Amino acid sequence: MALDIKICGLKTDQAMAAALAGGASHVGFIFFAKSPRYVEPAEAGRLRAAARGKALAVAVTVDASDAFLAQIVTAMQPDMLQLHGSETPERVAELKARYGLPVMKALPLSEAADLDRIKPFIGVADRFLFDAKPPKGSVLPGGNGVAFDWRILAGLDAGVDYMLSGGLNAANIGDALRLANPPGIDISSGVESAPGVKDPALIEQFFRAVRAARDDRAA
Image 1 (cartoon, rainbow, N blue to C red):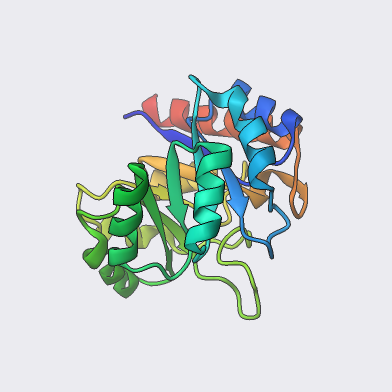
Image 2: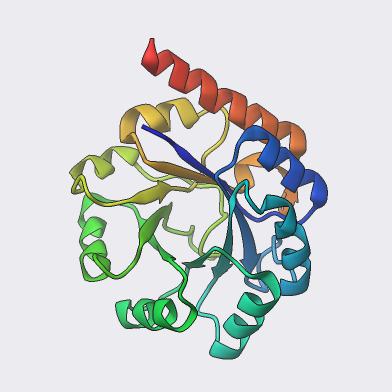
């Protein structure tokens, strides 16, 4: 099975180059002002040019206004929208229709019962991103560097397409792939030397760890 890999929260040419060199299938840009990974739409548009024909560019928003979404789509020309807030299935359908873009809906998980939150979005969202619930007091819906119990994903219907996120890094990606066997993975803080500062060496190390884990499973 092919494994999609998304490097999220990119802000520099060096980090983008490392993500593409490693074989990222998706590159993500954060449009949430409270995040240390925030990037202006025009700058994201400049950076994503390097990914054309190599990786899908994802615009990550959190309950964004119509005006801001229009600005993002115009300036960045994303291949996909990721909605990381409290957006409803109706909002997902509305934005898909408006922009003609696939939508990935992020949902926070901590226990098996949380999987019920997926049901209203089935057939509406094109893909899901499963992240850990934010720690108490965090203003960020994602990128907090915390994981959830990946074993709960065993209860998912086989047809649910998703990316696994939350607390992934080179040290634990092997366990994540073994326990959840996800069709895609998303990493942000796990390849940073400081909040919002992507480290090309850590990105390279992560891709090596993914390859090693997959080689071990294939052996």
